[in-house]
Amino acid sequence: MTVPRFVEAKRQGRKLSILTAYDFLWAGLLDAAGVDALLVGDSLGMVVQGKRTTLPVTLDEMIYHAEMVVRAVKRALVIVDLPYMTFQISPGQAVENAGSIIKRTGATAVKLEGGVNQAATIAALSAADIPVMAHVGLKPQSVLKLGGYKIQRDAERLLADARAAQEAGAFAIVLECIPRGIAKTITAELAIPTIGIGAGPDCDGQVLVTQDMLGLTGNWSPKFVKAFANLAEQSRRAVERYIAEIESGEFPGNEHSHA
Image 1 (cartoon, rainbow, N blue to C red):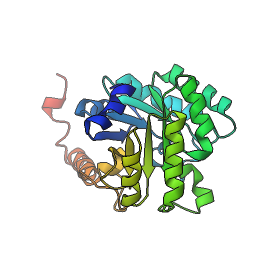
Image 2 (cartoon, helix red, strand yellow):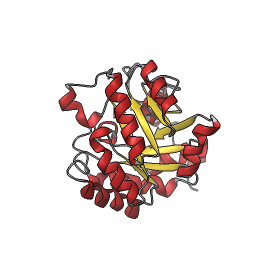
Image 3 (tube, helix red, strand yellow):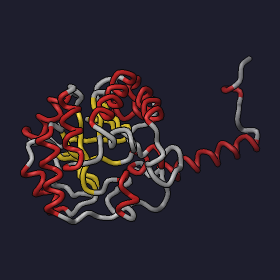
């Protein structure tokens, strides 16, 4: 998968699939399954590190995780989030930090949160030949300003953000937590792919956090998440069986022992 092929999928009418990845093991499994792109998201702050928001995640942490993901991937596009305060100060700061990600990890693209307010930064990244995916709607790095993780319903502002990102050179755009009708309008107007997360089925593709999709993150999840498995329960049962077999002496048996 390359950036031009990713963009071309919209013209072909082929829906794009994206999942998050934070390490070598999961990246290899997801890539082998055929996912179009892997997002090394700053969501690792919550999913991997157990923090309440994505805000504490650092550039070095993103690079550390992205290196592992790229090492495992043979075909999928790898996109890496620019974390909080690594691109907001100036376009020059964004180019420097995005360049570090690309050079040090081998990833193909970066993602940043913003539309109109980050158009100059998107343009600077594009001018530096760094493929950039934009992100509008609910922006997790703006959680303090938004007062929480809330559905975004201002159609005029959302469309303006999407247009600005495309005009500035973004090759795709994530639409997060916006009404289906607004996402459909944006998708129809843009020439670049829209990737929905809580934005309905009319986007050009979808992204989910892998751990949510696999049922690894507990009983509660946002409305837009569908768990395609219940690996949390399966994992718990496997560990219980492991403990029980150790206690009973069943494991390790002769077949697991060296003569």
